[in-house]
Image 1 (cartoon, one colour):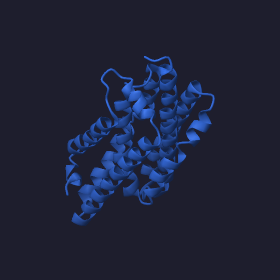
Image 2 (spheres, helix red, strand yellow; image 1 turned 60 degrees about the vertical axis):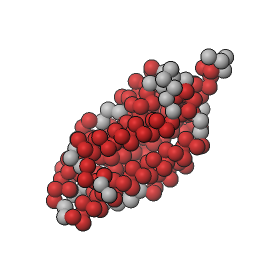
Image 3 (cartoon, rainbow, N blue to C red; image 1 turned 135 degrees about the horizontal axis):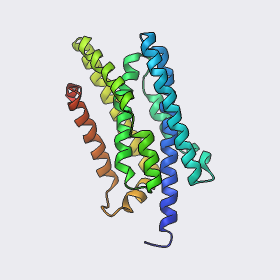
Length: 225
């Protein structure tokens, strides 16, 4: 390892955590905003509980970022444009749109986190995994709502859901590619690993995990066409 290796990896780690921290802040915002779209008070109350936990996840990430750099807020600020472009491009004004994001978008973030965890220091890996790759209750909630919407929907509704899923996945991958082009942080982290994984391989693994999950949920028809 070159003398500047550890410093380069530390900077890349801070940049990655900063990006995920702001992404989590926007995920909390989406969760909180979706409360008003809930079709029943019971669902609104359940979602409010998830929103509180999403904010706690954001605070945990932010606190860890502060332990990595004295310029935490500046690091986060640099990530805003890409994440704002992604979240602001999604239509989530209705319950089914929000539920689709929760059932598809959040697990994709979890898949990415698990894939990249081996490339960051152990303490950072634990924080990322705890905050972004461990939402079993939220995922079950979102999946149940999506499956219910499919069960009661006609062919037109199923087609609309298919497009919603494709839109979330497509925009997520486009945002990922743009973020990678803007920064070499991910490349630095992956190339530091013995397995020498690359960014393209990571993206493919995340997409494959998404497809496997859709099949396991019995939602693979949303991937057709």
